[in-house]
Image (cartoon, rainbow, N blue to C red):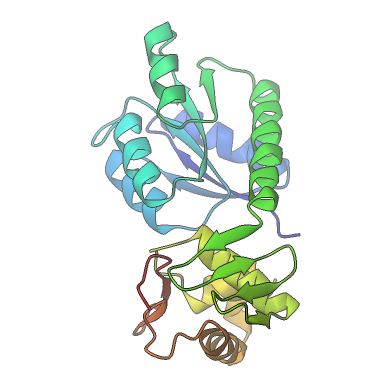
Length: 232
């Protein structure tokens, strides 16, 4: 299992550095952003398992980022960080898709406990999402196969299933080959030269009957993009 990556969006430098340091000490990988503009870009484009999101900061607020995130990546795990303790803010965050809410000042021990709990729940959500419906087929991750309306089925190799599941968790977002190598194969892309990603993509397209490359598109020079609502 890959080490979870946590994105920290916080404009207070001291708080951000403290959170990042304790997360790295606890064994997590981290990405950080210092304001709402950087945060919005990172939240929508980076690959991570959990977002720690400040509410009030320059540029888009944490609530703005949360709203945009829910439209593009509805299953993303999020913990809100804020100095506000008002009940209406907690309710706003939780009703708009945040998994938890931590009011500043908070202890690092408390934060780590909440991070661990939300990551556990998000892993359970992924595991429970055993089927994904496409326009022309159903992906059955529990049995590693693709089911078609004609009752035909195509089996997936273990790595093909892992790759396809990663795509379903990153739908409509461009995913680079380097990201796939790191998160699906567990390889360090800067030290790896391989065509294994391209070969697996080719095999997946064939098994998904995506001959026109509408379901898995190629973003030249950037990577691949998965479109679950594509009409094949």
